[in-house]
Length: 177
Image (cartoon, rainbow, N blue to C red; front, side):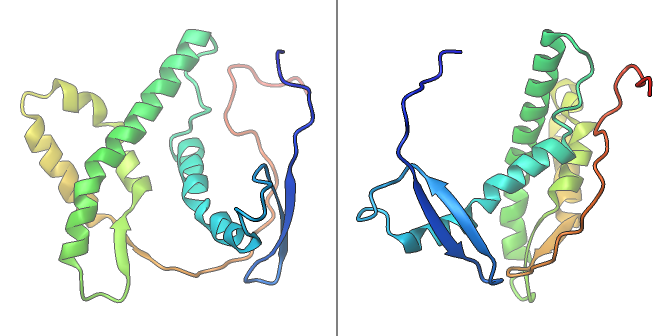
């Protein structure tokens, strides 16, 4: 497959989390004098933004749920969903700025509920490009975004519930068993 086969030097780090749980991290940043052990705990925490984006793409956008089985249909669905996500984030950014000025005295900071925003955009993306007056539609979207906000509660921890695995998306044909 053309992959390199020579060994790669890695570094293992044992990190104790706030819960008392120990995580073992593996990194290719092997120079301990340049990258101290303490830096990695903070980096480990910063990865959650990326993890949440993957969750949004896979769960909320159903990135793996394709309308067909051909290569072209998979590419088309993938790029359409990535475009919809990027457009939603672009359109919610001004609403996020508005929220910061609108609710300065509340206990928590607030943010746009991205699940609701993506749900509203799903049926609106095509209309934005075909409407005679897209500015009216954008104003309506902004109003919806500002009404569907949620508090940002830092430091919350919940234990994970073990769930049974199930098939994510129905296929065209049912299994024989």
